[in-house]
Length: 333
Image (cartoon, rainbow, N blue to C red; front, side, top):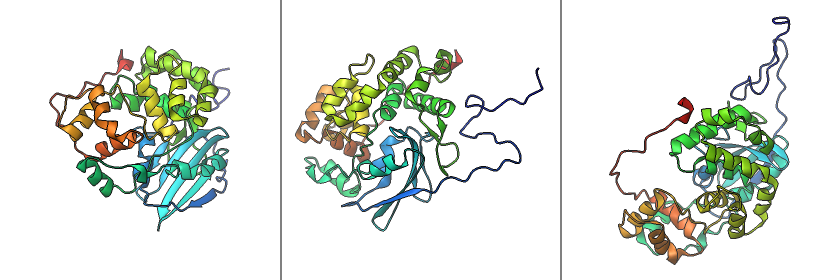
């Protein structure tokens, strides 16, 4: 029978969101976009607000274009959706496509920091006061989606940023589905929980993900519905629920709720670099540990995550005193 029938393209034979179309069959035009406009109540910098949602320059779910537009592909409770956000003359315009379009537009203000109150932050260090003055458009995003922040945070555990970004890029492009609407080339929606659960062990290995992180992702997607329910909880309670899953600790839960909940006080403890950066910026101590960092951030109780963001945006970081951590690709083994 070999050679008698042309093979049908499937998700495993098509790469980058390009679905093969037989010759002579026209592509269907995307459905018209659903549109919502939003006027923020203060300065708003799209790059600063949405930047934490981008997992590396090749993130298939995020694209920032030279025209100033920001594109996101998300798996919402209503289904996959693509969102394009633009800003002009103080007004934000959101355009969305796909089954999740209405869900994305409904939560557009919160995603752009409408639930955040920057005026509640009182700087007690000159560096933070200066950085806030220079970055008035900083607001903390709230996506309302737990898993899309949790899985890439798990992939970032105990590895270099480049390794984690590569794993996320490869897995989403291979197992996600093309972003709805006229999305930029090679944009994809994150795989559904069941799809994550069905990824073969060798594909995790090829993506450079060790068994410990892969197993944590699998345990998380098995209880995906319960984890998504945490969106309705306070950030502290949501972190407690996330940490019930073996392999998810304070670092991962904080990185997640900072994005899903807009958690203004969630501090990333257990990070390799952050304590030294905060210690250097606020006290000149490049060898600060988590205890010292938390002590320095204590005056900002209730706003500690914002304080840490401002430290990072200040550019005041200690100089390197050792080579970068070597990149290890277990997929070559």
